[in-house]
Length: 184
Image 1 (cartoon, rainbow, N blue to C red):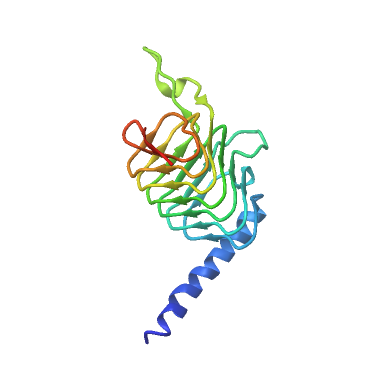
Image 2 (cartoon, rainbow, N blue to C red):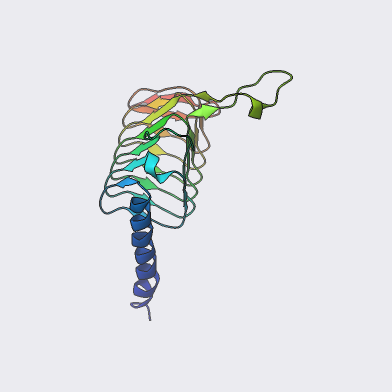
Protein backbone atom coordinates (compact mmCIF):
# COMPACT_ATOMS: atom_id res chain seq x y z
CA UNK A 1 0.00 0.00 0.00
CA UNK A 2 2.87 2.35 0.79
CA UNK A 3 4.18 2.24 -2.77
CA UNK A 4 0.84 2.74 -4.54
CA UNK A 5 -0.36 5.69 -2.43
CA UNK A 6 1.82 8.32 -4.16
CA UNK A 7 0.63 7.09 -7.56
CA UNK A 8 -3.06 7.48 -6.69
CA UNK A 9 -2.66 10.83 -4.90
CA UNK A 10 -0.20 12.64 -7.19
CA UNK A 11 -1.45 11.55 -10.64
CA UNK A 12 -4.90 13.15 -10.31
CA UNK A 13 -3.34 16.43 -9.15
CA UNK A 14 -0.93 16.37 -12.09
CA UNK A 15 -3.81 15.80 -14.48
CA UNK A 16 -5.81 18.64 -12.91
CA UNK A 17 -2.80 20.94 -13.28
CA UNK A 18 -2.44 20.05 -16.97
CA UNK A 19 -6.13 20.74 -17.52
CA UNK A 20 -5.84 24.13 -15.78
CA UNK A 21 -2.86 24.99 -18.01
CA UNK A 22 -4.87 24.18 -21.15
CA UNK A 23 -7.65 26.51 -20.02
CA UNK A 24 -5.24 29.27 -18.96
CA UNK A 25 -3.67 29.17 -22.43
CA UNK A 26 -7.11 29.18 -24.08
CA UNK A 27 -7.98 32.28 -22.06
CA UNK A 28 -4.80 34.03 -23.27
CA UNK A 29 -2.19 33.43 -20.56
CA UNK A 30 1.30 33.30 -22.04
CA UNK A 31 2.69 30.31 -20.24
CA UNK A 32 6.00 28.45 -20.56
CA UNK A 33 6.69 24.74 -20.12
CA UNK A 34 6.61 22.43 -17.10
CA UNK A 35 4.54 24.66 -14.80
CA UNK A 36 2.31 23.25 -12.06
CA UNK A 37 -0.90 24.86 -10.87
CA UNK A 38 -2.81 23.40 -7.96
CA UNK A 39 -6.27 24.75 -7.17
CA UNK A 40 -6.41 28.55 -7.19
CA UNK A 41 -7.99 31.54 -8.91
CA UNK A 42 -6.92 33.60 -11.91
CA UNK A 43 -8.59 36.72 -13.29
CA UNK A 44 -7.86 38.30 -16.70
CA UNK A 45 -5.40 35.54 -17.59
CA UNK A 46 -4.49 37.28 -20.86
CA UNK A 47 -2.66 39.89 -18.73
CA UNK A 48 -0.30 37.29 -17.24
CA UNK A 49 3.05 36.04 -18.58
CA UNK A 50 4.72 33.08 -16.83
CA UNK A 51 8.00 31.41 -17.76
CA UNK A 52 9.03 27.76 -17.29
CA UNK A 53 9.21 25.42 -14.30
CA UNK A 54 7.08 27.38 -11.81
CA UNK A 55 5.01 25.74 -9.08
CA UNK A 56 1.86 27.34 -7.66
CA UNK A 57 0.47 25.46 -4.66
CA UNK A 58 -3.14 25.57 -3.49
CA UNK A 59 -4.87 28.86 -2.82
CA UNK A 60 -2.99 31.18 -5.20
CA UNK A 61 -4.75 34.24 -6.63
CA UNK A 62 -3.27 35.92 -9.70
CA UNK A 63 -5.39 39.06 -9.85
CA UNK A 64 -4.59 41.64 -12.55
CA UNK A 65 -6.99 44.56 -12.80
CA UNK A 66 -9.97 44.19 -15.08
CA UNK A 67 -9.67 47.11 -17.49
CA UNK A 68 -9.86 47.61 -21.24
CA UNK A 69 -6.09 47.61 -21.77
CA UNK A 70 -4.52 44.51 -23.28
CA UNK A 71 -1.17 44.89 -21.50
CA UNK A 72 0.62 42.46 -19.17
CA UNK A 73 0.11 43.24 -15.49
CA UNK A 74 1.89 40.20 -13.99
CA UNK A 75 5.17 38.91 -15.41
CA UNK A 76 6.78 35.91 -13.67
CA UNK A 77 10.11 34.42 -14.76
CA UNK A 78 11.16 30.77 -14.46
CA UNK A 79 11.94 28.33 -11.67
CA UNK A 80 9.86 29.98 -8.92
CA UNK A 81 8.07 28.19 -6.10
CA UNK A 82 4.93 29.79 -4.65
CA UNK A 83 3.64 28.21 -1.45
CA UNK A 84 -0.06 28.16 -0.56
CA UNK A 85 -2.30 31.22 -0.39
CA UNK A 86 -0.26 33.58 -2.54
CA UNK A 87 -2.04 36.78 -3.67
CA UNK A 88 -0.59 38.87 -6.51
CA UNK A 89 -2.84 41.92 -6.92
CA UNK A 90 -1.73 43.95 -9.96
CA UNK A 91 -3.12 47.27 -11.20
CA UNK A 92 0.12 48.53 -12.75
CA UNK A 93 2.89 45.94 -13.18
CA UNK A 94 4.37 43.25 -10.96
CA UNK A 95 7.56 41.60 -12.23
CA UNK A 96 9.07 38.56 -10.49
CA UNK A 97 12.42 37.21 -11.67
CA UNK A 98 13.78 33.66 -11.66
CA UNK A 99 14.44 31.01 -9.00
CA UNK A 100 12.62 32.68 -6.10
CA UNK A 101 10.92 30.96 -3.17
CA UNK A 102 7.75 32.34 -1.60
CA UNK A 103 6.45 31.12 1.75
CA UNK A 104 2.76 30.68 2.54
CA UNK A 105 0.28 33.57 2.82
CA UNK A 106 2.23 36.16 0.79
CA UNK A 107 0.51 39.33 -0.45
CA UNK A 108 2.06 41.41 -3.26
CA UNK A 109 0.38 44.55 -4.60
CA UNK A 110 1.39 47.48 -6.79
CA UNK A 111 -1.42 49.85 -5.80
CA UNK A 112 -3.08 51.39 -2.77
CA UNK A 113 -6.20 53.37 -2.04
CA UNK A 114 -6.19 57.14 -1.71
CA UNK A 115 -7.66 58.90 1.26
CA UNK A 116 -9.45 62.23 1.34
CA UNK A 117 -11.58 63.48 4.23
CA UNK A 118 -15.26 63.46 3.38
CA UNK A 119 -14.94 60.92 0.55
CA UNK A 120 -15.06 57.16 0.56
CA UNK A 121 -11.89 55.43 -0.65
CA UNK A 122 -13.90 53.63 -3.30
CA UNK A 123 -14.87 57.01 -4.82
CA UNK A 124 -11.22 57.94 -5.38
CA UNK A 125 -8.82 56.54 -7.99
CA UNK A 126 -6.09 54.13 -6.89
CA UNK A 127 -2.43 55.10 -6.55
CA UNK A 128 -0.85 52.71 -9.04
CA UNK A 129 2.84 51.82 -9.14
CA UNK A 130 5.09 48.88 -9.82
CA UNK A 131 6.73 46.03 -7.90
CA UNK A 132 9.89 44.23 -9.00
CA UNK A 133 11.39 41.20 -7.27
CA UNK A 134 14.79 40.12 -8.58
CA UNK A 135 16.27 36.63 -8.90
CA UNK A 136 17.08 34.07 -6.17
CA UNK A 137 15.07 35.81 -3.46
CA UNK A 138 13.45 34.13 -0.50
CA UNK A 139 10.23 35.70 0.77
CA UNK A 140 9.17 34.43 4.20
CA UNK A 141 5.70 33.40 5.32
CA UNK A 142 3.01 36.09 5.64
CA UNK A 143 5.20 38.81 4.12
CA UNK A 144 3.50 41.78 2.46
CA UNK A 145 5.17 43.62 -0.42
CA UNK A 146 3.61 46.97 -1.27
CA UNK A 147 3.55 49.49 -4.13
CA UNK A 148 6.77 50.83 -5.69
CA UNK A 149 9.06 48.26 -4.05
CA UNK A 150 12.09 46.94 -5.91
CA UNK A 151 13.96 44.01 -4.32
CA UNK A 152 17.32 43.27 -5.89
CA UNK A 153 18.70 39.79 -6.52
CA UNK A 154 19.42 37.45 -3.59
CA UNK A 155 17.24 39.29 -1.04
CA UNK A 156 15.74 37.56 1.99
CA UNK A 157 12.49 38.91 3.43
CA UNK A 158 11.70 37.74 6.96
CA UNK A 159 8.41 36.14 7.89
CA UNK A 160 5.67 38.68 8.59
CA UNK A 161 7.62 41.61 7.13
CA UNK A 162 5.78 44.52 5.53
CA UNK A 163 8.00 45.83 2.75
CA UNK A 164 7.20 49.47 2.01
CA UNK A 165 10.42 50.57 0.29
CA UNK A 166 13.09 49.20 -2.05
CA UNK A 167 16.23 47.29 -1.03
CA UNK A 168 19.38 46.50 -3.04
CA UNK A 169 20.69 43.06 -3.97
CA UNK A 170 21.79 40.88 -1.09
CA UNK A 171 19.63 42.56 1.56
CA UNK A 172 18.22 40.65 4.51
CA UNK A 173 15.16 42.56 5.70
CA UNK A 174 12.54 42.05 8.39
CA UNK A 175 10.03 43.91 10.52
CA UNK A 176 7.02 46.18 10.20
CA UNK A 177 7.88 48.24 8.28
CA UNK A 178 10.77 46.17 6.92
CA UNK A 179 14.26 47.40 7.74
CA UNK A 180 17.69 46.26 6.62
CA UNK A 181 19.04 43.64 9.05
CA UNK A 182 22.17 42.65 7.17
CA UNK A 183 23.78 43.02 3.75
CA UNK A 184 25.26 39.83 2.25
